[in-house]
Image 1 (cartoon, protein in one colour):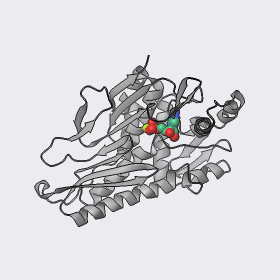
Image 2 (cartoon, helix red, strand yellow; image 1 turned 120 degrees about the horizontal axis):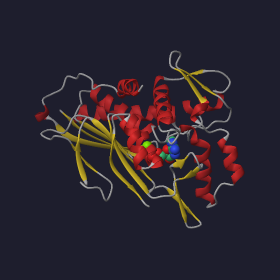
Image 3 (cartoon, helix red, strand yellow; image 1 turned 120 degrees about the vertical axis):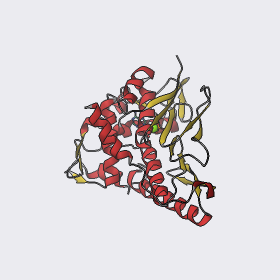
Length: 316
Ligand code: AMP
Ligand code: MG
C-alpha cells in the first residue's frame, strides 16, 4: 500500500526531461520576479543567453498564471470554484492539473488522518472573517461550517477524471498545495526550454533543478533557529509552513491561518516546519500537515512519502 502510494506520487512528481543543453560552463545566471497568486515568485536560472532566459522565464510565469485560473479560491470563475458550485449534482470532468492536485490532496488527507484537508474552506472563511472583526466564530457558525467540511465528501474517478461532491455548498481551499504544484510545473517548463539548472521559489515553497555550475546544490536558508542555518540541495523541493506570518490575535490568543480541522480554528501554538520531498506537490501539503500533527506524527507521515522534516519548532 505504502509502496504503491510512493509509486503513484513519484509519477506525479514528473521526471526531469531529457534536454539539449549547452555546456554548463558557458551559462550565465539570470533572475526574474513576478507577483502571482498574490505572492512573489522568484526564478533563478542558468541559461546560455538573455533571450533564452527571458523566454523560458516568461513561459514559466505564464504556466503559473494559468494554474491560478484553475485553482484560485479568490476568483469565482476559477475551475475550482465552478466545480464547488455544481459538483454535487453529478460527477464533473476536470482538467488534468486539477485532478492531479486533488488526487494528491486526498491521498495526504487520508494518510494524515484529516490533518491536511482541502475542504477546510468554510473554516478558512470564518478565520478571514475573524481577522476582520477580531471575534471568534460562534459555535453555531462552526457547526454549520463543519457540515460542509470533510475530505471523505469528495469522490474521485481516476478513469473518467471526474469529481463528485457529496454535499452542496462545499468550499475547497488549495492554498496548502497549489503553490507546491506550481513550482513543479514552472521547473518543468524551464526544463523544456533546455534550462535544467534552475530554482523556483514561491512563498514558502521552493523547487530545485540541477545545481548551479560548479556547485553541489543550491544554498537554501532554513528558518531562524535552524542548525545548520543553510542546506545545499538539488533536484528536490523544500517547503516551510508555520504560524509566524499570518495570524489574528483575539483576547490574547493567536490564531494562525493553518486550521486544525478537528477544532475548525487556526493553530494557536507557535509552530514552524520545513519539509524536503521529491516535488513541491508533496513538500507543500506535508509541511502544512506537519504543523497540524506535531513532530512525532509528522515524522510518521512524511516517511510514507519518502520525505523528511529538516526543521521543526513548536512552542510548548
Ligand atoms: P501553507 O502556507 O502551505 O501551510 O498553507 C496554508 C493555507 O492552506 C491556508 O492559508 C489555507 O488556505 C489552507 N489551509 C489551512 N489549513 C489547512 C489544513 N488543515 N489543510 C489543508 N489546507 C489548509
Ligand atoms: Mg503547505
